[in-house]
Length: 223
Length: 86
Image (cartoon, rainbow over all chains, first blue to last red; front, side, top):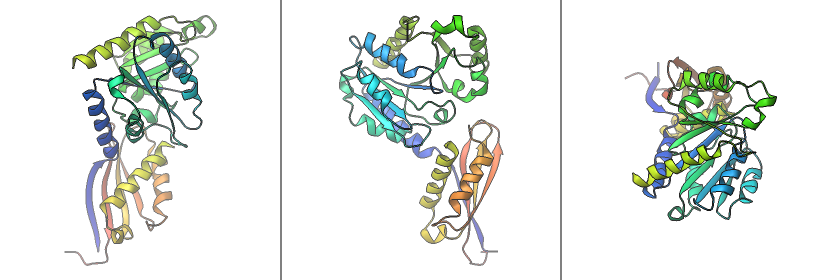
């Protein structure tokens, strides 16, 4: 036999994780926290950010990186609510953002003039859970037009997240979504998960969400 | 889509670790896939088979070992260099 085995034993995500660590260090040095917003398509991530930029943009300096498989529609929408930089990353088929794309996007961001970075990931509850983007926290957005059992169907995403935004609560009278049941399922996979109940359409619950953002910024500044 | 991007990364890692001559001698690629890794092992195997049958590879076989947890590792590369065993 002439077969030889070369042991590798290396994480497939090793290179991404190295770049994510560089992103995290760069942001930490500038005291800029980054939130990685993840969800299935149509949960209202972009609307949540639109309202956040419109209502909080006078107080806090946000930079945004949006990821989409095709088009920069989300970035165009967000740009209407802020004079600050909104960068679109078109993944051309890839189902998630990776740390290299965030690192490249940061080249155009003046971190000294930024309080927080939002990364709006590609709408997908599977793949983005596996890719570290150098964020301080993943925030999973779940809308009431989805099933309450999403946390059980996609446990890794809910396990990796620090907070969950239950969005579109203005539609609760019209849909059979049980908020407490959804929270219970989510706590089965991640007992520490924090919850925000919002309607980015009416503004309900947004103050609690803004409180969370201010808390993350304060923590980054104090670190 | 995710499995294909992971398969492409595994192939990149293999090329990075092997000389061009070794890439052409690659016969087996061992991958460890955790049950909670978010990957479907058979889908990943299919993607790897598709990539490994095209140059610079010459038809190496992916061998996927399932484990508990969320591990996702390139475990080993097996090459047939035509030389006798040491």
